[in-house]
Image 1 (cartoon, rainbow, N blue to C red):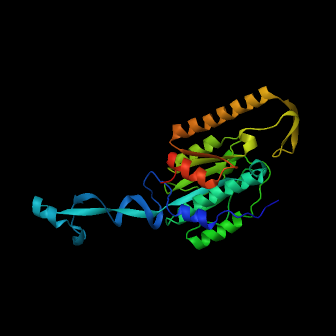
Image 2: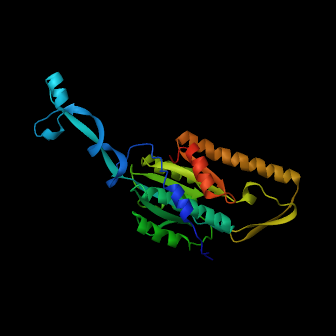
Length: 296
């Protein structure tokens, strides 16, 4: 069942106004924007010089250099393109088992989307469910369309199993060399999401993983006889006695699991943002986002 949420408030939006997504590599996006492109264009930011060729615009000749070297040089300037960013949201039951976790994940997605549109980029929110990928509402550019998209996100529901790798590969228009791809999940899956992330990287997309865990997933407080239910796979249950050694083993497994994700990101030059659903989204984004080179 979907829940009505309030994902962004005025105070948080004001905080986001002062930061930007840190796109590390030049882009070959579409339309005009604020992102530096690999191509040369007509922005006001100087790039370099080249020799004059017949037919060049005479207004671009640097006459000071012409006087010094008795040769004509043309000034070249960076082109500025609109980045096109994709935010993939895992809609599995494990992401919605705890409403605080679902809300935190959607708040992060909305915040990243706001950083995109407030800097003249376009963003697409893409929903991963089962083995399918579906766009929430098409490309979003401008704040009016962004707020309309957020209203749709506030009513999203979570359920079932998501094959993260297959769903990411189902995206028919992942882009090429024109923006960032964010994969937002708890990554509590045995599907091949790493291979899917590599496929995005092969398309010259800049990628980042955003992991959200509930407090119970990060460090459970269970004790004694328990019945653990798999919400994503038909409600299969496992009965076990949780004692101190079991909790210690679980904590070690979580540390190993997160270290494995971090090693993968480091090996690929990807940013990794992790947070617990009981911490403010602003703290996670502003503190660890800067440290990970995700925002600036």
